[in-house]
Length: 104
Image (cartoon, rainbow, N blue to C red; front, side, top):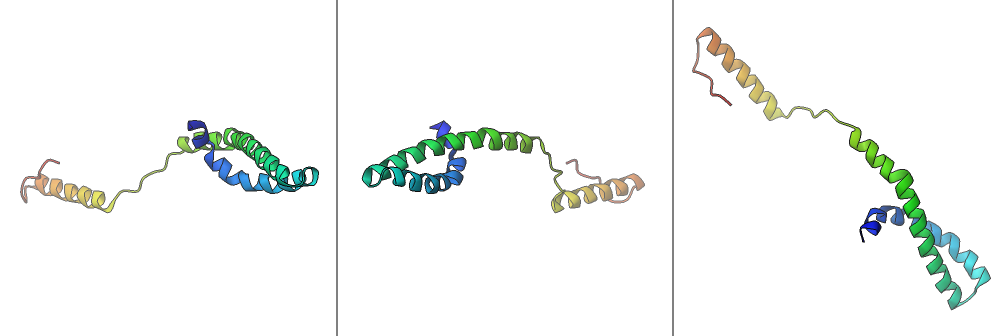
């Protein structure tokens, strides 16, 4: 089941494209119920194979690449306010005015 979970997005992207190509070709060769059955089975096999190829060639390298990208997190407003309060408190403490600063 893990295998199908890994390739599920690729299956989602490819299944209809493959079926729409396979169905008319099979129906020309095998008309009727047998043609429909064969086209569904053939489409299913081709979709899983193509999805696995897409997963290996596109998704895995993209996941590897994206995990190596690091974004700088902008400081939160709360962090800026706390930093400014600490600077103000330590400056007041140095010159001897104001209360002793609490340790964070």
